[in-house]
Length: 112
View 1: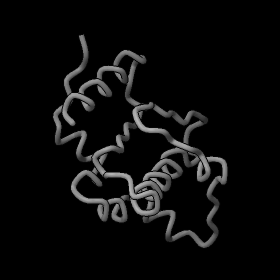
View 2: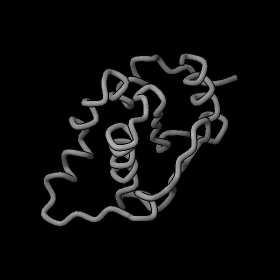
View 3: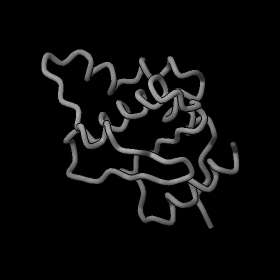
View 4: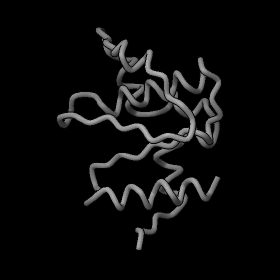
């Protein structure tokens, strides 16, 4: 049995579903843009993300994983011209196991 997450909660994490311009209002994107010095991993920037796959980024806490992912999402929306509804983000900090993530992904796939 999976967990139940209201669609509005998914939309709060994936605010570009309301329009790709919304990614520019993201807290992580704004903080990155305000930095004097910026670093963006060429590895992730050049990564080929193929449709219908799940991609994860793991690492220590507070090193910029979410920011890098949001920057990649912005790149996908504006440079790669990916449909905003085709990009799903979930912060896994609150998950207890992989089954919860599987349930969330399945629910998102069914809603689109």
